[in-house]
Amino acid sequence: MSSSLPAYFFYYPTNDEKTYAMLAHILGIFSGFLAPLIMLLIKRDSKFVLFHALQSLAWHFICFIVLMGGVFITLAILFATGSFPPPEKSPDPPVTFLLFFGAFWLIAMAAGISSMVLGIMYGLRANKGEWARYPLIGEFILNKFVFN
Image 1 (cartoon, rainbow, N blue to C red):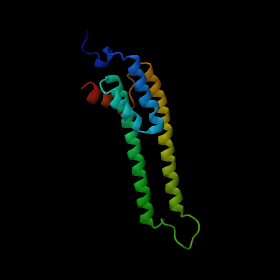
Image 2 (image 1 turned 135 degrees about the vertical axis):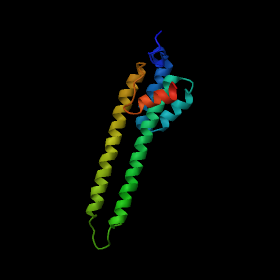
Image 3 (image 1 turned 180 degrees about the vertical axis):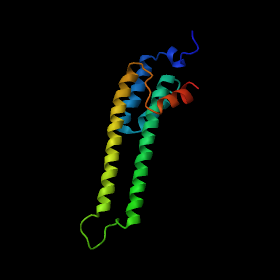
Image 4 (image 1 turned 90 degrees about the vertical axis):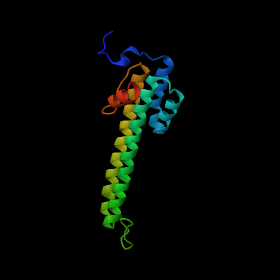
């Protein structure tokens, strides 16, 4: 055996592990970070489930932070500009409110669609037994938390 091969190269998951890893991704589409957390707690002794559940958990945590940051930034700008609450004299919503609400809505939709695409794509790959890594966070999780 060569020492240059990664540790996960020699670890092949069982069918049970593949199912739990897939569920961490697929159910995360509907429940956010709750399903990956449950799968992590149920199968915490499996490195394969740990890897996939942590990736999904990290992705949903990042989405949550971005969305909450967007909410706070939007509200801070609206209150700072005096656009919210709307003035009593005007029945129309202020333009600033519409612009920031529209931008926030687009970001939220992009996060939802990307969560759905990533959840399905990586759930199917987990069900095949692959150690598929999310962009930017997968390699970090694999090296720091699973095979450290």
